[in-house]
Length: 180
Image 1 (cartoon, helix red, strand yellow):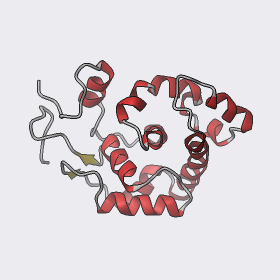
Image 2: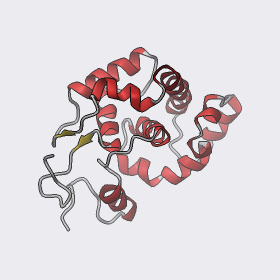
Image 3: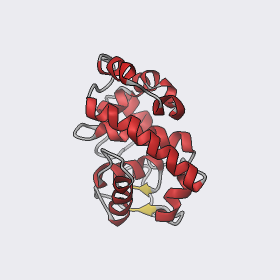
């Protein structure tokens, strides 16, 4: 089977992610949260690097329990900084904690994070390929930054929207390609 050109066929985790998760709509808030945290760690790195460490991130970050992460203290930050199985970037770790608090505030304001996203997406799927940003990612990124989130530039948010299935971007040659 032909897959998107970015998919490393030698990495079973990447193939599994490509085939069964990427661009498939999943609007459960727990998933939306996990992917936002993971995407923020991607900044400056490859998604494959983050994906390879996903299980370790899940363990290190208490199974992406937002309530626990919102309460991480300096001791927990130091523990994460010494964890060789995750990306040990202090700015990104602190951003994950900060972004968790903002994510939770958005949930409280809108009922769910997905309800917040729908104010931008109008509950539609965008079909496009060969882009790294668009008007939607620009607007969402700007709003998240205005709310205080870090590592949520337009390119990261575009990747996030692909990951959760708001943007469908499989290459034309890919067996999963479709236009609508």
